[in-house]
Length: 335
Ligand code: KG4
Ligand code: ZN
Image 1 (spheres, rainbow, N blue to C red):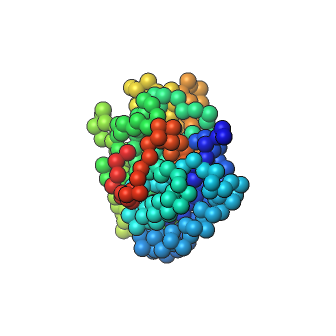
Image 2: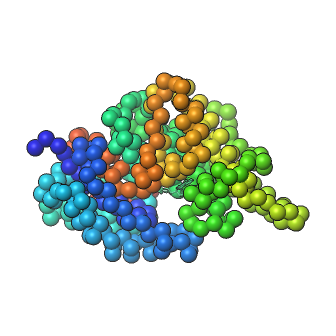
Image 3: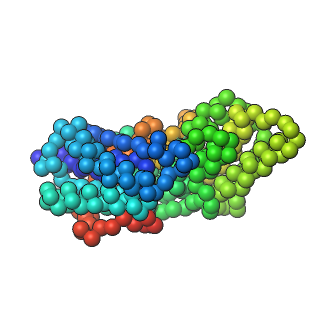
């Protein structure tokens, strides 16, 4: 047998997903069941509800992934699962399902870090990752610049000191009355507005690659408050555009400086906020006429999915980095 098949499972937040990946690159199936509708009315993900949905969905989703891939459990080479970070109750559903499948079909078990998964989503798009590379990870829980000198080696050179960028998007959206998750709504409104408010840019210390978004979020809230007090109407498109302009300028600015300092050839963008059109356009413009190879996954591979977990797991399968049946959900695991 020539190709290697991994069944991957992801249940760290509000998406129940299973995928079958061939040789760490080809997606044979990638089934994603979103729970967004159930969490919307609470304005965010409710952990207990997330766990219940995962329990209800996991068996069906795994079977669908196997069926869609046109394979059998006996054809698999390994089972991979997100072990963290994420909601502990949600993680446990995926971890236990993966253990049960590994045990029943006598397959090795691989634990994957959720952020490694987001980064390796890019391996499903290009033939090979070229090192040293820089990954800009922007999601609901993470904002990080990660330097990779080789497969499986992650050096965090900068990270958020407060809110993650997706979190800031969701909070700002909530403040202006948009539904959860707010990122896509702000993105859409921003395209119709102008950066007239000139909100602060959180550059922090000159040599720092860290981020901070809570000040910007407060600036948005204060601006809204001031307009209200003066009895003036604020154009919500302009507010969205101003917020997004500040976010993008800092994300792109710090990425650019890291690319120069670390002599980077390849820049990967990862995580749910990588779906942001403003950010995609700004990065594409920045690296259009350069030697730097910029890769941004298509939208369905930016948000949570199991295919990316399978891609990251392929590196561990090659090195035979397996875990035992004592694998646990680990909400605070390090990359
Ligand atoms: O990676 P992800 O699916 O889940 C986490 O691991 O956090 O990211 C979800 C985050 C949410 O905060 C959502 O609002 C944000 O990604 N997001 C966006 C866009 N699409 C999703 N933020 C800005 N613009 C978008 N187009
Ligand atoms: Zn994620």
